[in-house]
Amino acid sequence: MGKNVVTWTVRVIVYIGLLAFFIWVFSNSYLNHLVENFEEFLVLLRQHIQLVALSSFLAIAVAVPSAILVTRPQFQRFEGVVSTVVNFGYTIPNMAILALMMGIMGIGFQTAVVALFIYSILPIFRNTLAGIQSVNSNLIDSAKGMGFKPYQILFKVELPNAAYSIIAGIRTAVVINIGATALAYLIGGGGLGNWIFVGINVFDNSILISGALPITILAITVDLFLRLLERKVVPRGARPSTR
Amino acid sequence: MIQYKNVTKVYGEDVTAVDQVSLDVNEGEIVVLLGPSGCGKTTLLRMVNGLESVTDGDITFNGESIKDLNEIELRRKIGYVIQSNGLFPNMTIEQNVTVVPTLLGWSKEDKKKRYEELMELVGLDAEDYRKRYPHELSGGQQQRIGVIRALAADPPAMLMDEPFGALDPIIRERVQDEFLAIQRELNKTILFVSHDIDEAIKMGDKIALMKDGQLMQYDKPSQILQNPANDFVAQFVGKDRMVKSLTIHRIEQLMERYDLLVSSIEKGEIATVSKSSNLRDVLSYILESKQQAVHVVDENDEVIGQVDFALVNQYMIDLADSNEPVVNP
Image (cartoon, each protein chain N blue to C red):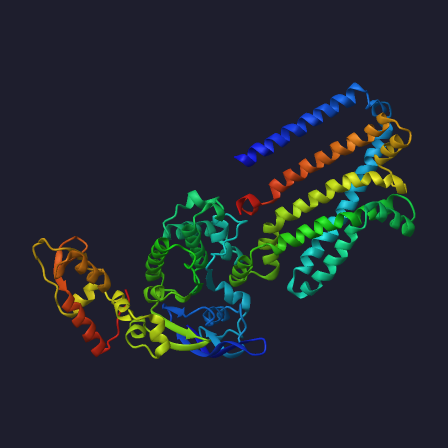
């Protein structure tokens, strides 16, 4: 009950803040730049989404299987090494990764994708790992004892019970990624970051807000969508509220 | 049906968990592997379905060495129940119960039918639980589901690792009774790990008492209680072992032996016990009634005889003398 009150209070405060922000934006006509340059906006938005989608997809495709791999008995001894490498990748500031990648690959879209990809791996990897490792060992034992094959244990027991954690990791990574993609402008990767940085440089709030606001809305929308996906994918009995 | 032949299990270099154990488990019997923690009873159990490897010696299942059998197929032929029930939280009750039939590729209809049969067996409403998840059930209900899940593909044998250990005493007793009733119908061959002497006496057709990986005594509960093979067994079963052994015998067995069955005794002021009560309960009733004897009644509440302390005493003495095989309740 007490927890609910707190949640709702916070929620109301956030909504009020959001409302105030929109009133501020519209009363100052800060979105004029967006409306006047709608064609350009669509191009930037498309670039932004492409950067996020591609880098996130690659990160999921690499992080989930490698986390699965290092939890298999045959590869368990590599878990430490892989975790260290992935953690190390995350300790470098994302600006630095961009600069580093630029040094190696030059400027452009691909460089931005690779940099964002590297930065998205950790949350997904770590959550997948934690999710699989937190599956009760009794479940694995009884699955084995009943004659599950190793791949059946993975797909019928481990992954479904880790699904909540895995999707939570993907959500975190993608939402952070959407924000971080604004930096792609710095290495010529395109995206809505263009307007943010131009806005900062010429002290024009309208240009800045026209870049920042859509990114925020994009992040919220994607987060919502992934929440829905989580409801669909994670079996009712495997959600944390049921443990 | 399951035979241990000089089975030894060594962990690492020199930790011997099971030491030269030989043991025959006959078809349709419940054998309880009993002993203090760390005595190797669970290891002994888990070697049957290959969850633990056998270091030395051999185990046969239906006459075939388990080394020659396909591990996965063998496991699907042996029901497996563990203490914390091991139900899969991501699966509904129906999916959990029919998990082995699913592995075996049964048709949807067959699985549904089997699920409903099994739920009826433990007195749970099939419809009501079909779409529910394990966390929505009480501990006792979960354990019942764990048991029928192991029975789902109708395996000839079951391995049960302290299956009722996590339940509170009242629920445990009820689930034990229920399980015994099911077993009387199904006649599975069951290996049952327990650390509780009372549970072992109640559940076991035979008890294998272990200590430090070695088999101390393998016998019927009555023999273990009345003729402990050594000091450890005597100590483990407790000073009250003769009182415990009273629980094995039912009052109707005593009355049959002495041909005490009479018809038409008037129901008097005297307390009554059901003829299926065990002797320990009968003595307790006599003490409670503050009289010399109690009347025994059949299922229709008709008095069929009278029993007193001396008679129970005589019965136990005669049994020990004749050393005759005793039927378990």
